[in-house]
Length: 336
Image (cartoon, rainbow, N blue to C red; front, side):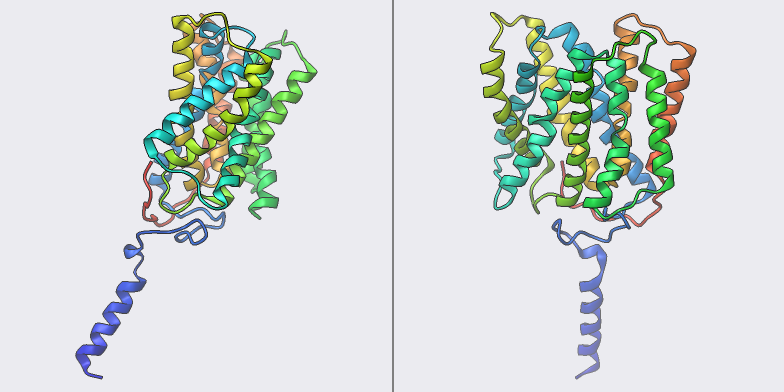
């Protein structure tokens, strides 16, 4: 073979194996990954992804104020259905993409875990428990994700993760609990079940990834629609519709559906896809922080010294739970 031909062949081989030319991947064959199976990313990029993902639970922190101030009372199932189904149908109309193959049942499972079962349990717990008790129970999610990760992702939690999880629970308790907080057993069971389902959904989302070429908005739409289709007939048969909807009701449902659900969950799922599951779970602790600040700003509440200390502990837990990942940047393949 001529020298020119061998040179061309070597150049072609180097180009073929160069990571800069990888433009597509599937969940089964992701780009270079770290020990958790998450695509490698730089520390700066990871911080940006985490900041965007945190917008999801941050907006969820306004759910309590929105529900109490804008929505009709005593209709948790209706609130859950109207939060999920319209947002899912809007995303389906925008993306014009339906599941294929085994993603029909995977989207259904994730939709029920994230919305169909989680939403009504969440609203039921919120109606039966003070916000502080509910938030404290939900703060155990990082520890639940760590536990599920052992069996599903084959990833053992580090001591840093466990310590950060315990610090987060203590911080949330100091931030939101009151000495006169009432304890309702059924509400506690509902909130613990809701938190467990969401933790399982985080781990399964990390395990399954998403189909190649499917946007996060489309995947979010599949799940919202599946969960909403489960919720809608139950809500209509059990609770029915109010006699009329006020402008405040419509504004509340629109905010929860578009901002607090469609946008928030798309960013949340993006974080699950690109960050370790344990790191994403700690971002959920921004929920009680925003809920407390919303009460402070909108409902005229005040912060005690203990609550300020709890706020510091929660933020420390979130930062500690992110860990350190100074890894090479992986190519960005699919966009939101």
